[in-house]
Length: 500
Image (cartoon, rainbow, N blue to C red; front, side):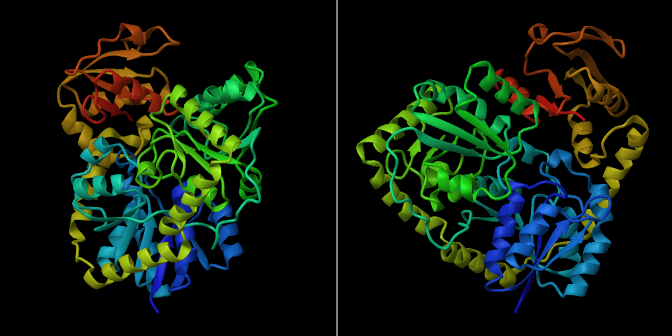
């Protein structure tokens, strides 16, 4: 029996992508010998939430310190390469035949090449322009995604094999509801409260129906960001606290699913929301935006309610349509069709068969890839980090990305959006790395005057033209900033850059 190592994503909290890989590990333990690798924190402790879930499922796990990235611009190749020896030692001790990882795990890919162990990478939604950064052959030859849309993007942009396999259901069968309620429906939203999940627009869309007593709304997911605070403040200021409940992170959402009538997904940026799979498994009515892979599986008024677009008005109309179907009894047809979709796409046996076929294909062909290129890329990254003196200037060690920036920003003009700590770091980075680049101004709505002898101006005073560059130098709200600049006709990784 082949032995597969599954490498999860984060040392703290619960990542949606990592949790899906863990579910795949549990599923494939029925066919293979499985061990889960959980990242450890600085004290050597494996992620407690993942460990708890492994214990619950009876899955063997081991904690190893390693570094992953979600975006190409965040890759710390120096730290990643530092993890190689421990991963290689683990692979030898455990006699691993196959690696299955999530996100960009460069250390696992390097060991895969060195030891000739096949490696499959799970990674999902991404801004297409992010892939323009990646020109080096340092990523796995095999990729698994949960939507055809993103599988095609990854495959075409990186020239790798990619397959779409939908998220696996938790239960072996749908947990059917005895009745479908006709009034005051309980609507559930799952996932971290953040801009791409779009909870604030969802609350605003539901507001009239909440006031009329036709709905209740429950929101479960990490809710500590500035965006989450904004959502909570809106609920309080508009007198909706008795109708909208925030749960923050919930480890086991089964009780919430059992008590809910509908699952609302208002996301603007996803590959395929796994919360939809959980909801169909618990026989909830699905209401969703047409985000990424959702329309590949769900059709409006057939097996779900899919909004025309991502606007407040479109979401509100879909919810009203759902309410009408619940009231007149037609909702039963929607659920019959949704059950068929579940069996075709998410049922455990179906997903297991698809993953197993992919594993066998990879084991059979296992394209041989060179290891030497890793060292040359790592060396380039280290050289540019030394040039920047990252530790002295507080600059993140993202040498892989800085190689791209150095080439991109040889000359021209740039505006740095953000006059805080990260703005200062961006200034230092650019002055050292791109001496011919002209820094025109810092953009900040709350500050004025000068920073590093460069003027601070308001957003309304910025000229938005394709011949200039715009560096985003803050974390909280960067998605909104990217979207704002996109609306001005500017493109990520062309005119719009994340710095540092």
